[in-house]
Length: 451
Image 1: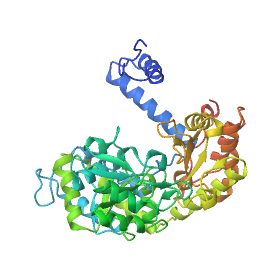
Image 2: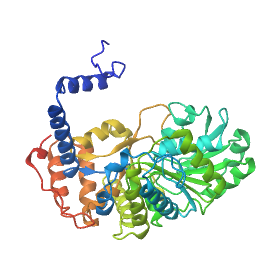
Image 3: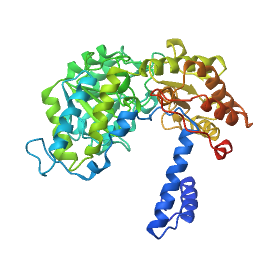
Image 4: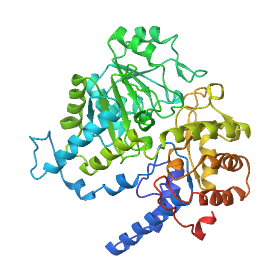
């Protein structure tokens, strides 16, 4: 194929087609033109989110306090090193923020120590690889089909960057969890230095007892990636990984945690905490973004206090949505187990064209979700599931009286080709008059009534 994109001539055919269109559109050559184009993109984005239904499991909206305390001027202030020995001067207030935030984040996940400087959970996981392994070591993780995140993998993942060999943990598709009957033999054979559980698709808590026992047999560190469930854990509505045997918890600070973008790690071990801190600075980071700190501290406390409550309603909404979707004839994962105990529910889309195509049909109707892999699909094949997350829709004000209508809307969007689902999206979204904090919903605009 003759390259069509000047930005990424190596990209896929689909990407080059889109890039070529955008490159032809954007030929700005003055500051004024750039400002206008960026402003328009931001306005269009806000319209898309304000007047659609966001069911993507990896996103969220900020509370008023978290949003108000994000001072972007802090982002350009380097503050390297521990308080009391900073490389820069005039960063006393950032030292205050570091202490406040570190304590709040540690407490929220029921730990003693926290590292909050990571710019993503992927970086937090890489820090754990640096802290607890050497190149050439073996780690044990969930496969992508079992919900393991890309950062856990050897190929195209940060585990591979560290030079680690990755073995996939034995997994039971029927239990949607580690196969407790096989974990001992697996660990004795693979002898991993690090075991990683948790990840991208997290419908149910892990049974950590057998994994902890197996890790102890070979002296492995047990890491729990709570990127998707950290906010539910902080609220007391999901399992407590550190109390149940995990050595370290890493997580994204947005998603259910509902703070600014970034990553963190929490532990009760001072030795492990020191290693994770050293991996952050000076190994992986020079400067970081101090503007995250204040909002993150508030998000941590809000997740614990639950005023207003959003964690319990989020889980209940996901469970009821899954049951309604199943009743309408969609194949929902985990029916025998009660569908979900998190913010996620997963639809098996094998019979409706697969995950990516199904997600595009939902997008056509202003419903935003994500594709995911399923435990029983073949490795390396395109995702065959649809992952829905209810956390943002609940925080935007969706009550339980919307569940049946949302389920019908999702079902219609996935199984019909008419225009009714888009109209129904507008009507359902219009029923959310205020969010959980009483902020009024944006007024609808005519242009968002058509595709």
